[in-house]
Amino acid sequence: MSNETKNVFISHVHKDDEGLTDIKNLLKNKGMNVRDSSINSDRPNNAKSPDYIKSEILAPRIDWASTMIVYISPETKNSEWVNWEIERAHKQDKTIVGVWERGANGCEVPEALDEYGHALVGWNADKIIDAVNGDYEQFETPDGTTCEPRSIRRHPCG
Image (cartoon, rainbow, N blue to C red; front, side):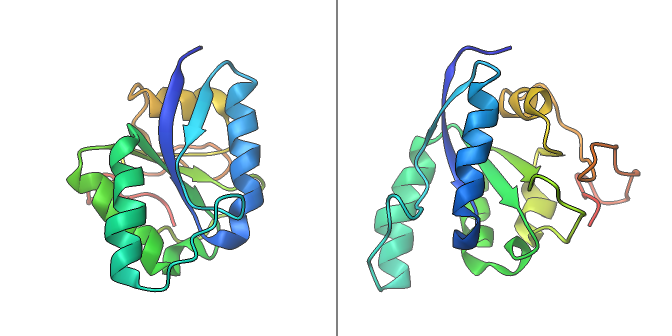
């Protein structure tokens, strides 16, 4: 496994902040140190203007990261912020990896992940690391089984 330090931006909805610590610990236990630039309860964003938040706070943090991890929970699909963050990462040619919330039973994924994602994996450190490193580009259900082929490229199970 990789002993590298990776600069990532973890796109998520704020109710899932605790899951960010879980995913970073999961990867750390397998030898990958993750430096996360996302906004969370430890580093809150107190700005009010959506344009300012996007251009002055989120965009530089996404641009700094080599990879975007999208933490997938039932609320993620409807987040305009998550979709915007994924689109920004795509425009910057970042690797975009969806990771199902631990214990997830499945839910719909954000449209932007559906369109631009490189991988969607279950709660499995080895697969997440491989996807972050660009060595795994499969779409999986939360239990880790491969999604059935779809007519749309990189279209994950929902």
